[in-house]
Length: 502
Image (cartoon, rainbow, N blue to C red; front, side, top):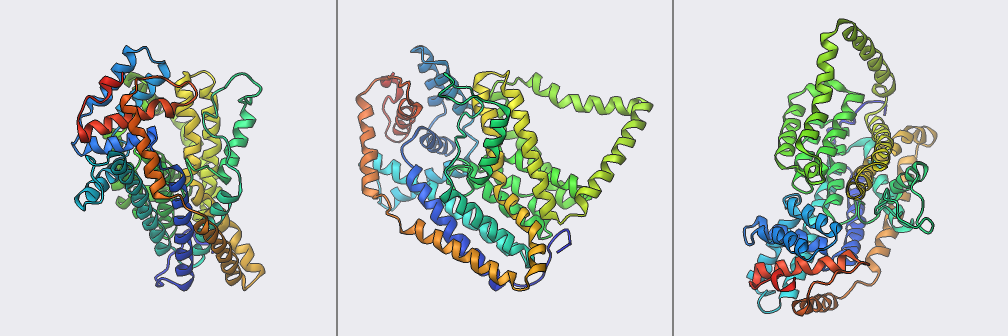
């Protein structure tokens, strides 16, 4: 238990089998429940579908560019125009989910299950629903199998306990209000005052329940990335650090913006606990490939209004500082002394800890630093960046790493528990299994919405064909959903699409 990593040549054990099967039942139950509640004709999901249609070459990206032109022509609010521009510029961000929707529609049509010309709302809804739910479920299940295949010995129960604890919190603890958390709504009251203590409190609460928007049990692309991160840390802790560094590449095709976050955290964890690992070719190759993919595909910084000059200055500043340090002998000597002191501190604090524990501490410290950074920048930044960057960055980080942090913290106390009770493994397995069985029964036994009712509700969107643009100040969804519905309808059935609507 004092080793840095858990390595074993044992075959898949009975404990691992019980853990993975119950984890699959509970994870898929919560995931299916969230899918039943959240997969509807909504602006964001229809936009994901439209991106899949565009990436498959069935529709031109011109539709989204024309949407911005239409909104400008009718003097729509700046916020609506900004949101349309963001989506138009970032359509390649979610290829896994987007293409899953598109190809699910193709399969359903080829099998005669649905026909866009006969009943377009039915075709669109079922392709969206099954494409998103089924592809996400397959990826989540694969990540759980990888995690428990890799884990051996004392690592199995912490991973199992992490899933059980996160599931229990999700189904029992009310979710926090994370949406636009750093944007100061008015009047105050009733809107709460945005302060640093309140922001730290929200971030701590988010570790308990990141909400359906960010939870690893959820259906959205960013949530699927959390499952990939969980599998990556299981591989890392089982002595397969090189394999773990391939995870950000997989993430880049699920949610591009999450890939550099996962890569940065993996590298920071290695810098803290075992910096020599970063020099291994098994780690260097996937790191370089992820960086190349990020440079080629990531455009979030430019989309939110940071120019290439500003980005270049930020990247050049540390390089210039390093050159200055090496050019000035006194600064070079001082930096070497400081580096040696930091290395001694790092070795004393992190190298002596088991790797899961060290990683959990590094991730938590990173969370506190990120919250402080987001709060500081949000106080003076542009309102749209406050909403769509700073208010979202730390909840995404927390949702992405909730399961590895829980597993690392459980691993920290597990040696003490085993020292106190020899039968702790059997007792813990029994208790956690009972909790998981109860959650599974509750999630799977509750009534499920009727597919026929959902399809019937989807058909009501055909009424948008005879309507004209009319913004709703109370709901982005009511205003924006018709745009993406009409663009998808044009892609499959032709017609004027948005031209008549505006």
